[in-house]
Length: 144
Image 1 (spheres, rainbow, N blue to C red):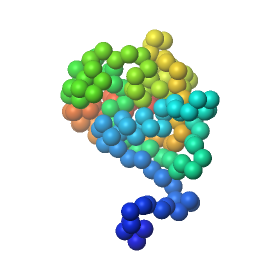
Image 2: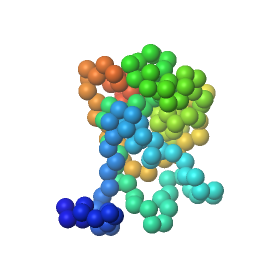
Image 3: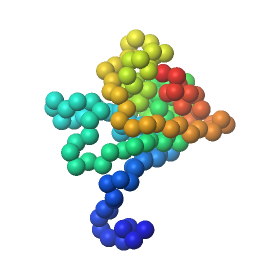
Image 4: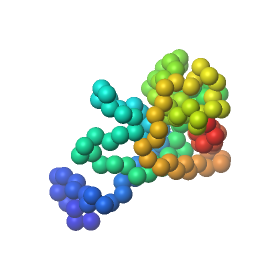
């Protein structure tokens, strides 16, 4: 772990990169690999030259369907409302709505906004008895 001692982090190019996030961090981890590129003309799912490519995302009890959290009045809804408001527009950064059409076929047609293929593999970890972010959040993402 000697490479952690400096001001910069130099990682070997062969080292697989993972993004792991819990709760809102699980949402951000998923969003980071589903969002559309900002560069005009860039293809969805591409990585800019010189960027580290993420191999896997692990969402631990992630809030993956923001609208569902608000509609169901889940305990995590307060955090969603504070960050995004109570009236989400279609296309807001809800990971389940960002999945490609063949993956989100369980969503109503009006929620199927333009999406992108994930740039990394996904792993979901969720406790069955979680009362703040119900396990339904991960299940809905899996079956979307």
